[in-house]
Length: 48
Image (cartoon, rainbow, N blue to C red):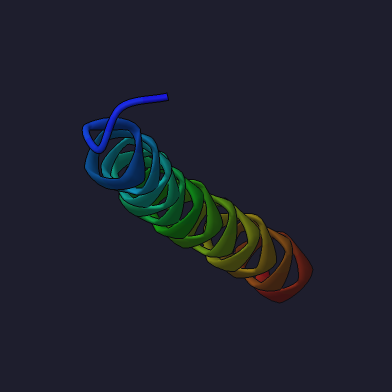
């Protein structure tokens, strides 16, 4: 192995962690928004 492996492999792992963090936070935000919208629809249905 060359010295490049000690830089390249951790860099790729870090990029993967960052991409996973961004996609995961976006999915969590979308799920929260969908849940909130569903609760608002239930509340509106009860009132009418």
